[in-house]
Image 1 (spheres, rainbow, N blue to C red):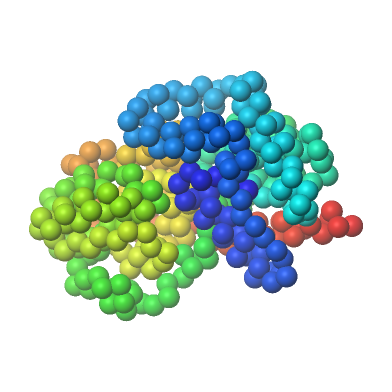
Image 2: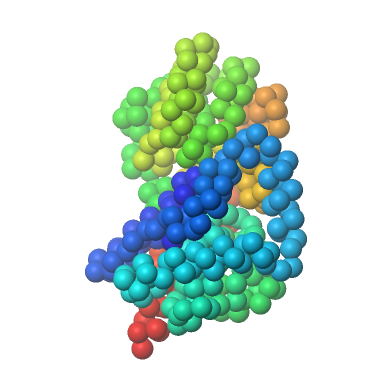
Amino acid sequence: MSAAVGVGHTAAAHAVRAALLARDPGIETQTVDSYRYAASVFSKVVADGYIGMVKTVPQVYSYIYDRAERATHVPAFRRYVSRYTASNLRKLVEERKPDLVVCTHAFPCGVMSEYKRQFDPDLPVVGIVTDFVVHPFWIYTNIDAYSVATPEMRTALTSRGVLPERVLLSGIPIDTRFATPRLPVDALRAELDLPRDKRLVLIMGGGVGIGPLDKMMRALASVDVPLAAAVIVGRNKALERRVTAAAERTAYPLRVFGFVDNVFDYMHASDVLLTKPGGLTSSEALAAEVPMILVKPLPGQEERNTRYLVTRHAAVRARGERQLATAVRDVLTSSERREQLRASASPLRHPDAATRVAERICDLLDSHAR
């Protein structure tokens, strides 16, 4: 059970699916967008309104997120939506008869908690938190297992009543191909048609392409290091056209790509990554050991991810074009700085997270089969 907001939640689901199939090819899986079963108005407001809100009135979203984070009880509206959606899901669950349900987004986690309460308390449910902080919207005492990225998240769950043995400190599940380059750097760049005689900066704006890519591109123009850049804009076609037009005016080589399914190759081919700090993208970069410079995080979970990564010296935050140019220059010219970032990021690197989650799922399946 995922949710159609960005691509990270579904990517985590696919990573766990691949790990399950590697363990047992006979396992059957289905990925479901939980918003399809919510009230149509709620689904549209959340799925479409989230991106619009964080782009146009981020302060409002930040306020809502902060209030919800401090709340000590479940709001009546959210309780109603979870109950409504759980009822809508009943037909699907009874038809498919799943042995276990995995949730990679907080919304279906709440829905399945309600489903267990109303219809089937014995159905095992696993929650996979896909950020470096855990929002209270994730936390329910009748979820059978959680996968989290940090010890602090484990403490947050147990402090709210989740049994310690139900919390797996695994990291965020990602495609295992981020851990090991397919080819040497020069060969990867040749295959991707990227320059081999310059430092390469990878710029990403998330799966829906809402990062400040134009500002990142402008900042690179003032870096006095021979460099080239690759920009991945995701599925945002309007942004791809705008960035492609801007690329014709840059003084350094710049390639623009839409949605790609081999981001791991681009990370392994790059010297530094400029990105928004989504949980999946950050975890992929940690696994690929590419230094991260975090730019303009979205309010809420991305802001929390930024604080966590920067506090642990695993990434650099850049505010504004001048700071960004300075940070890029420092990373590209100082082997000591690059090594410090890699060393600090190493404890947060969990390329085997999907495998560990799959093992936990199989353990739950076995225990419930007995």
